[in-house]
Image (cartoon, rainbow, N blue to C red; front, side):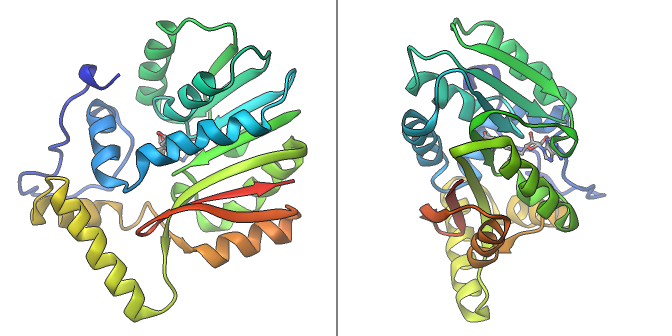
Length: 245
Ligand SMILES: C[S@@+](CC[C@H](N)C(=O)[O-])C[C@H]1O[C@@H](n2cnc3c(N)ncnc32)[C@H](O)[C@@H]1O
């Protein structure tokens, strides 16, 4: 997938005006490189997505990939769950992501019925789902809309179905937050980003990405009704949580 895309150099030069980060055409053109160099454990998240899918996806059900971007999570499910009839519903609001996602999936031969929809994930109705993926997306949904979205997900899942939620997280204790952030910056430097790139990207993300603590995520999911909620992965300040109905 990645050789149709370029290296992420969006923030390499000083920018006269820093506009809020968005998943527009420019971001999409570098997205695979950006996400791999910015999210510690990204490839592990994809492996775990496949591993979990193999356990919870059921025949004749729907699998939703919310905020699918270029469909990496869906590809993990498709590679892992074979010889089963299910429908894969991929949703993203970015026009450019969806156009590229469609291009990628049009070349992918599969017996699974795949839908790629350009919509806001807050506006869709989910039904008969055995698995719903929300990988690195909730952090871009306004805080006040998160509860309703997660309730919607809960109601869309069948009993024993599961939500896989991956997020960048904050740490409540200030000293620990500083330490983990310092390690995260080191991770980005070792991924080849300069100090300028790190700080400009950070500013661009400031208003559009709001992160919460692992405890806040787990508590909310339990309150909504999920019967088992636990972290399946943490890499620095990135966490994947499995919530089973
Ligand atoms: C970091 S990317 C997700 C990565 C992807 N899930 C993966 O595993 O490769 C965030 C994506 O969420 C999408 N997004 C953010 N808010 C959304 C919303 N309210 N409705 C639909 N898509 C949304 C963005 O357009 C973007 O493509």
